[in-house]
Image (tube, rainbow, N blue to C red; front, top):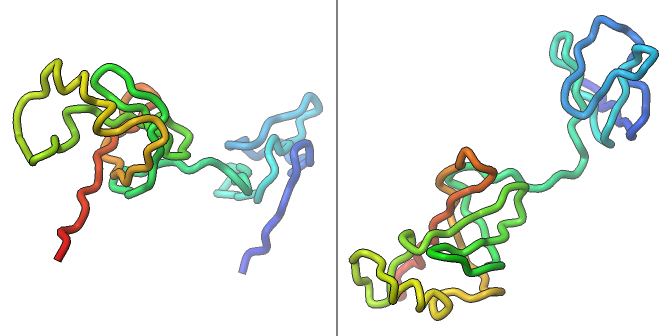
Length: 146
């Protein structure tokens, strides 16, 4: 079993110049490989990186998380899912009251604050990473009440 090598920022990991630097490391002026974050050293062949001990959640497609509405924008809600990336819930992604399936109109856009308002908690599923630093999310339907 491999032992864990914990480092703090500024700790010298190795003085050997044959290693490539990975995430969480940098080369000092004198050629030493130094940790830039607190974490566990990982070595894969000649690549050395430091996996942080604590980091923000990185959403994966299909994850179901609880988010908080932080802002109501034009045709979308900005949702804090406590991840590194911004999450967006589109008006076109929600089911309208009464289960009506139709195009969203300007009237629906005006009624957005009646559906969700700032501070509301919602259960959402992550479904797409954008090229911009955002995650698109969908509301998770509630199970039927018996």
